[in-house]
Image (cartoon, rainbow over all chains, first blue to last red; front, side, top):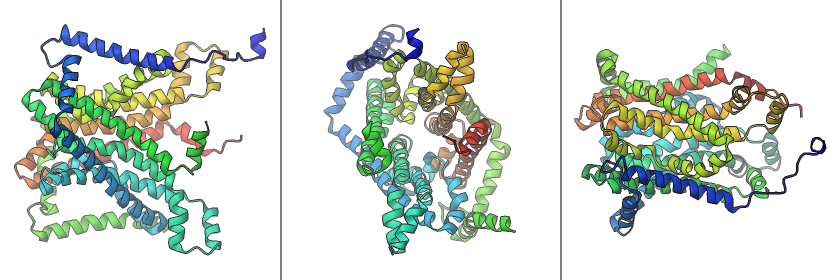
Length: 270
Length: 257
């Protein structure tokens, strides 16, 4: 009855390589299943083999037009994201600090936030045509609300003791806003930016695929029209990889920007 | 009196915006910004109820069926991956990769494989909105309280009881959060699939109006889509509050640790 008195101590820790090996195995099995289906029951249909897709990816990687498309897409997403951050943080700070502004804008923000960017695409397309500017406009529309609302929440969440301390040290309104409230809201803002970052890439692709702005989304649409099946799959895989970078890259930026913040420091200690 | 004042502070800006849109657009005489009265008139003519059964209903049907499939499959797969370590380490990287593919990028593939019918739309809505629910369920199951696990073992709960009374309620807040994202993805993919490959649906009518310069019709379509996006979110938030009332209650009470 020893085991009742003492919880079993795990001495055998799973070796580090094991999860990686299983993950590789899982991916390989999925690829194999795809290959079998593409060669067997689905042969000749709209499912190219893994080999054909990889060859197409190789062909794309030596084509300069592909890289400029990819650059366009990333640029659209990043410029839109940058504009959203500036607008969101500036207006969020003001709305969060001024109670009247907060109450007045609440309903408007709550109505605008759940409207996806693709809903306003017809208008953006009408005004700006199938251009990069149209894509940037859509990215801003899709990203700005999340950042703005997070900033407002963070600003209103400011520690009252910190604010009183700052006031008793004689800090003026503007310095209090910029040096106390804004850094305090940092964690909230970064969460908003992280949500917006994943959305920015997706919206950039939408603006290209449906709206015809230059970028890999439009390449995908053109490949579909031309019946280049392997290239379509290759573009989808590549867009997944870029999306992965947009999703996880933000975590690194977060660590760098908030290295002083308790939530990040605690994580680092683990 | 205070309630009236607080209501007034909340509503003056939206009212002002709508009123100034109304009067500005009435006299602006710009092609791209038709008078709001004209937009509302077209809205009423088109959607209430001329194209209601031919466009609105198919759109909503595809959305709801697709979302329902994604919810069921997403929760089931999330539970499987959350509870089985082997399945998790084998499949989690692939799941994260597939989630990172912009959902709309899959629409051309779906058109290629399944054509332009409603099946294509339902499948692509279900597939692309699956991942938010799946990952949220997985996280919810993994973050479950270890004490709960031990207690249910001590009480020798049957696997079924444990699943429905311990694991699922414990992960419910995360699962509902995931479902909300899935619903929004479903809505976006519904619009995209109609804009790219369709001859019916609200998204198709709206993009068609834009391409044929039927500008009031385009505005009416955008108005309907915006309204739907807002309503879906609202209904979901209310449902979530009802389902999770025990959870919000629990969090509102300060824990006496």
